[in-house]
Amino acid sequence: MIKVGIVGGTGYTGVELLRILSAHPGAQLTAITSRKEDGLPVADMYPSLRGHVDLAFSAPDKVDLTQCDVVFFATPHGVAMAQAPTLLAAGVKVIDLAADFRLKDQASFEQWYKIPHTAPELLERAVYGLPELNREAIKSATLVANPGCYPTTMQLGFYPLLKAGLIDAGNLIADAKSGVSGAGRKAEIGTLFSESSDNFKAYGVSGHRHTPETSAQLQRYTDQKVGLVFTPHLVPMIRGMHATLYARLTKDIDDAALQALFEQQYKLDAFVDVMPFGSHPETRSTRGSNMVRLALHRPEGSGLVVILVVQDNLVKGASGQAVQCMNLMFGLPETTGLQHIALLP
Image 1 (cartoon, rainbow, N blue to C red):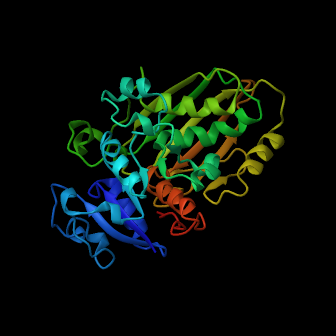
Image 2: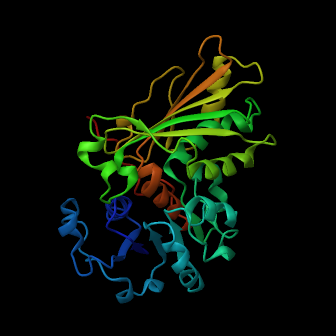
Image 3: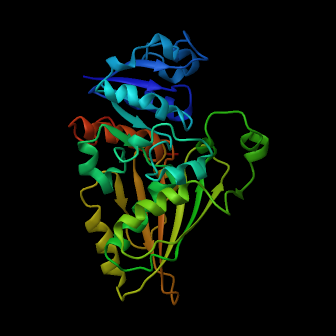
């Protein structure tokens, strides 16, 4: 059994890790840290876990995480970089769900996240944890940077087209929407029920942290200079993410060939569902699951290809993807513990 520790188990990605790992046949939950909730049984905070998780939260100084095989950081930015060096030196594998290791360039990280990077020596060692595009590297990784939720949808949507050299990489557009849980479990005016319910708004239009992450990863797949315009939106629902991606085709290709390109690319990926051409995937079709569903469209006379991508921002967009990486790192089938069917209605 894989002995698992979770740092920051009280947030939404933390409880999602607990939900998934408590039923994972190859994982043993060993420690869950929270300085504020020290001694509180996990099931008292999250009654959904009664009968499944018997542990209590522990203050970080009361737990020896070096006894774990893998430690997940479901924490704010900056926490993993402070603790990862000690864990890695002890032979513990680390999966960070925050952004501490997503950007290889230290200056870029500090520009976007407004904090100094205290472990820059680990940036090159970190492996980007998007299994469908980086599977082999993840298998041998000891430090994984779990992708952002928006970047997951954008990369899976644009990748086959960039790889095939079919689009203008300098003019990519992503119009994406996320449920309120993407903001985390904290008290902020903008995510109060009275503020976010019955409302719809864009944010981060002039620049968002996920833009440099996505651009840097997409750049790996093309010789063209990547230019990405990304606009996120907040929608009045708890879970779910919908990305509408636009790219200008630079080569002639018919609809059938375009569809075949995506089907061929993802035919062995259990968590990417390429729907029939012209479909309209819905966020609820992925709720609670680790599945991404996508569909292609060709607006008549525009020269554009439109890719619609949906996922659960807390599962494939965060904790499910992290467990997917853990499975690869420990030689387990990639789907282990992750074959939940989406909740509907």
